[in-house]
Image 1 (cartoon, rainbow, N blue to C red):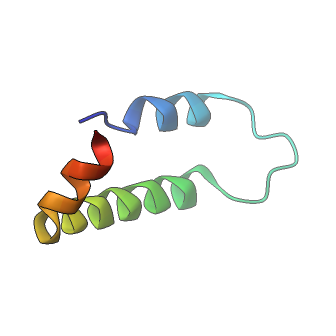
Image 2: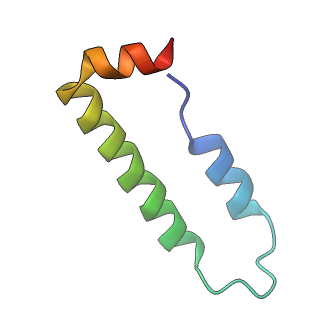
Length: 53
C-alpha cells in the first residue's frame, strides 16, 4: 500500500505564501485520513480488494 507521508513532507517544505492552513493542521488531516482508510480496510476487505482490481 502506498503511504501519503512523502507528499506531506514535500508540502511542508514548500513556502506557504498566503495559505491559511498551517502545516500541522494539514498533517493532522492526512493522519486522520490514513486512520479512516485503515479502519475501512479492516471492515470491508473484500469490497476494497474488488475496487483495487
